[in-house]
Image (cartoon, rainbow over all chains, first blue to last red; front, side, top):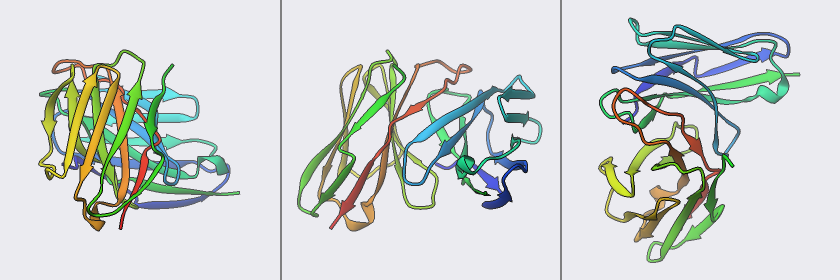
Length: 112
Length: 116
């Protein structure tokens, strides 16, 4: 049931640097969402980008979407140690709109 | 209130036990979901309820039995589980939309289930 893949699987950066994660998916979508998960906890919604949008910003987050390539990227600028978490993209099914499939996830470590 | 509440937070059960996981939301969402997540893996969709009716079952074994008593509650009944069913079980809710209108989902903190 998994919809997509993320790259890289793991990323380690210094505090203050930017972190970029990529997501590729397989089918037509209505929107793509990015979620964050701290170790063993629930998922927190970060940002949603609709299929007719190309770029979206929220605070230190910048998301791009290329539906022709079925891919998205999440950029976190000026990273902080508190950004350390796993990040997942999730896509819905354009035929139903009521189910979410997650990518494989990127584990981000921000070193203070 | 943008909270999805799951209980219990932790559960240890034997393979012959019957237990239930509970999920509650008061955001007026009409779609609710169960996901299963193994360590270092993404959440995997199990069930989707839309307007209290089961709309999607992702070929989940019958030892997992979902129930939606009303629009705010979602249960997952567990019976005769196997040790490999040990995982984090996540509940989520969202507005229920038709094709072309995929919504944002809100997740609970999950129930950490261990089957012994």
